[in-house]
Image (cartoon, rainbow, N blue to C red; front, side):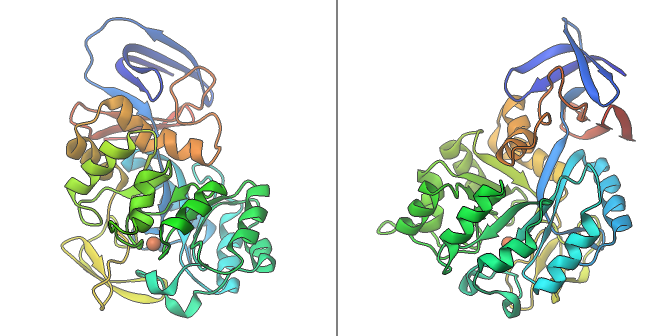
Length: 362
Ligand code: FE
């Protein structure tokens, strides 16, 4: 495949015009040259925290559902997808693993959000299933397919669990946590250097204890951001970008089953969720996941922050993939996977190319 006369955006090299040539699933040549362009080519997007999409929910999706979900996500430029669980019984988590483990790319693995979190910071997680970690249970629910687990460092046995997970190359992300600065610093220094849907379900910044929110800003944590203007305001996104820079931000959707559908009554982890004007909430008023589509989040980030396209390609794919040690994806470089999103100058998805083939065209 030859993609001609485009603006190529690589997260490390930056922007230049030219052509990209692919062979099979791989980028085999890049030819820079001066040209006028209408289309922008970036590495395909990566969504590493998404619970559900158009009524397909990680917790009860079949292998076919996961495949349908991946295909539908091509419309939104996503070429790497990590479905995400909610706090559930061990049996239910094992069932998800059974259904997903034979799915190939674009599914890159599974993200376990909970159940080893702080019930006081539960957000929309079902408190009936929140519990203390034990290494025995973690061994059972983290086969190789699990890439990422969101945990609260204040839970007993956290460090034992962390050590085991690090040995297995499974990333621990801090989330749904009431930790203060000292605890956040200790977790960071021990290698838990990532934060789930920052700053949602963390303690707010206070000048006598900067807590989870302030720690994420002060220390070099990588932070997930839901860029819908609801979970964080436009100004908070701008502030985060100003403080963290483009290397530490990972855009995610945290989407629930109403993503891509209309307002109405839905569910998340066995709890009823009411979606009104695109905002998903429990009866209690707690926000319950998002209805954000990945490409909309990317466009929002570009508009909210005024960032460069190079920075946009970092936050929309490169950072997320690098953080999880997923190799050969997230760059436009010879030898890398030919996964691209083709955008117009207003950052609307025009085409998605996955493993060297067009899988979506507007
Ligand atoms: Fe959450």
